[in-house]
Image 1 (cartoon, rainbow, N blue to C red):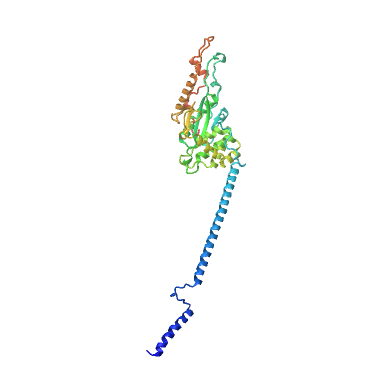
Image 2: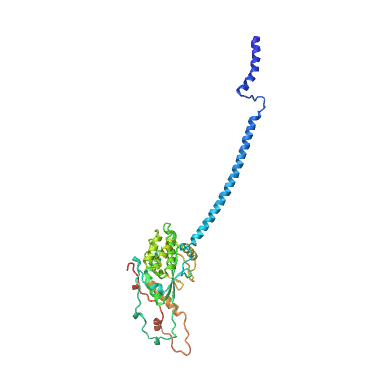
Length: 366
């Protein structure tokens, strides 16, 4: 090897480190790490931590703001609901008027007028002079006991087939017995099959509409109750709309038609209908020992009627038997000064016992 070659090698080796800084390449063979890159990483890390902390604070602030907004919205909604329920749009009443222990008493005035609304028509039997007993007043023994009126209570869902069959079969004779003073009649609307109308809550809406008629047109209560059942929509269907319910009420001659329509279409008594139904379903009702288990129940002096709901003669026989039992329960003791004893033949002339009359059955469309 020549001296030039020997001298050239060290020269190249000495020049090599001088060329590397020009390329920006820093040798790491010595184990020393430059401070600038690490400082940048730490700065980036600190900045990231700072941003993360700021984001957490922002999330907490937004959560607090959203929570406050939700609370305000809920409070505002509660105020709106309260105002709607108790507004001047016909909803200031929590329950209908003329309500007695959850039912509507059907008195003589309510069955004195006829009704006509399509196939739900019932013919009003008119009182005739010859129907008055011709026995002279002086010949009737004053000591003869008389039976008190029977208490007939009807629990009916307006979308129940048995309730409809019972009303259509017995409407005329029920009205007759009320006029004669043989019975006291109370209708208890219920809504136990509300879920069986494809989501329209027909039973509950129909019950609420009865509350509207009882409040604004009480004279039409018996007629409207009858029409709802006699023209009952088919089971498992949507039933009448609110507007159609209002039309039906007005068709049977309800007073104050504008108020009745507004009440029905605003569904004023929907909450009452649900609350009232919940309060009696599955419980003993009408001061009896009978539980309401179903969508229809007829009670005769607290005893459940178990006969055919569509057979008026069968129901009349049950009423007659109950009347006879009521008559003979209080056995009077004759006084020593009286020689007269109650005779069975005088019972029929003095006891206002209903007589089962099959021919009085109302027929749809008559």
